[in-house]
Image 1: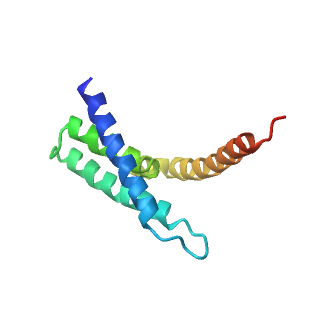
Image 2 (image 1 turned 30 degrees about the vertical axis):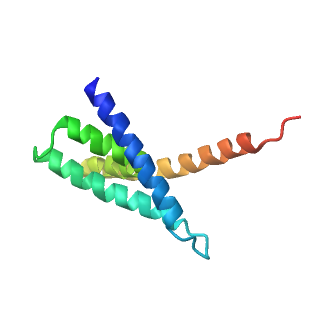
Image 3 (image 1 turned 60 degrees about the vertical axis):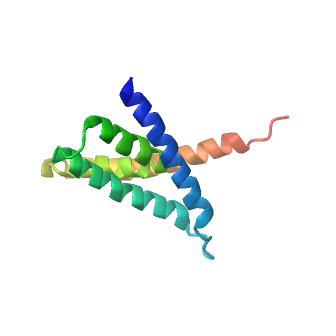
Length: 125
């Protein structure tokens, strides 16, 4: 139960950080989503740091749950997406699996967003 509380608190902190980032990063003229890009890259970097600390036993499972699942999850789920691919690529024989995971995640994620947007944007009479 303590782990769940840590994830809950971390998630709230991550979500607040993401919102602060969204309102503070200027909109690009070419519509490049710089705010989301920064959130995703920062979260990926921080998740990598946390994973490295966990592997070296420098942080506890509770602190990992707070930082990785909570804060990074609230800031961005992209970090977990990239981390999963990196973990798969540790094994050379699974390189094609990692590439398939990345491509399928992006393509199917795009399709899911499109379908969800279409359903949510549909006018009901």
